[in-house]
Image 1: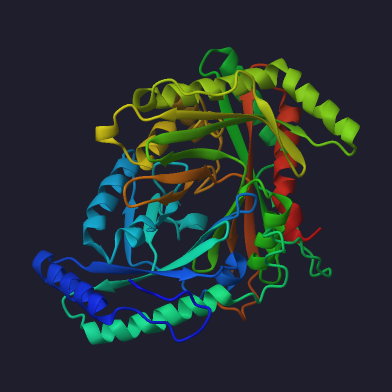
Image 2 (image 1 turned 180 degrees about the vertical axis):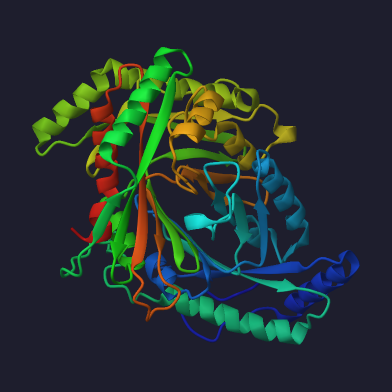
Length: 497
């Protein structure tokens, strides 16, 4: 499609080519009995991701920002979608997307290559469909009706429409003009003050004090410590090597949570993380994840082992001492080594040996630092390339969020953790048309639930999650302190303290 770069209006496109594409899609819909999608690409001067997300009104919205990398994906709506559940949900999703892409029509390869299926998966293989996570399924990936994508100085929008046998080219063309105009308008929107600093990074906002927040733990601290003690005992009996015990805080607010301000604060505080938001109506999963899970790019596989934590110091000297103690801690090093070993073993069948540094480094961020080991490899069989979803299946859940051995730890958690994790600690990301993609683990995460009625007196609720890895040598009080440290990473920017 020939579309002007939008320094000025009006924009133009080759109407005859677009009409032929639409007509071909309608013919295919009639022949197959399945709806089709047409996707068009519009090159843009820039995108302000937080402002664009704020301006979107669709019930389904997706936000993905990597401040240091200057990468963003912001989307709304769903033209085609796949929803899965069960132990084979990743392979189901892979197969369903491959079939769905046969129903997607583009004018050129450049447009097709830019397509992204966005979404994620719950921690567990299935969700009950009730309770706090009722708006979320065990697995959901969507081809959005509008997607903004930016990387560095490059930006574009994808506008997609769903067609069936009743679709008429004149009507679709009219809708296309409207949708492209709307995409350009939203991309130019910068209503959020400080949404993008001159450097390209969001600014930390200041705000006046507001109504009080009521914070409640999901269980007494002594109960959590007893559960950790039970896990340590099970480790001593040889039931498993490691288990990750999570807990949560519920935060009640008499007014609506300002999601946009929350995203701004997270982006400013944690520029090395992936800041994400997946909205299902008034229920929104928000995370500032430090944990990259896996990516696939033309056969190259990247993964990351992250385990072992310590607080940051109040001075450079104290911070250096805490980091050194973390690097020298036998308990933390053993925990980290177990994660590295598990990641390598999980991907060996498709990648062979993964390469990485012999010793972990330190990943430092606001309030916390972690032992970190990046890993890299190449797919063995270029002729039978699995999608990134197959790699996610092999890795999830990693020892960093579940335990080791995986099934033994998961069985113990099902019995003892007593927490509906939902999408917390689940994989969230995107898949391209040929299976390349990138997923991160939804850690440092919370579920925000607001009333559907903006005039309701019902309080807004946020549930924040954090976990700690339990291994031989763990102490309950120390693991409780680690979860407190991780919970503060979300609680402070959420409540503006």
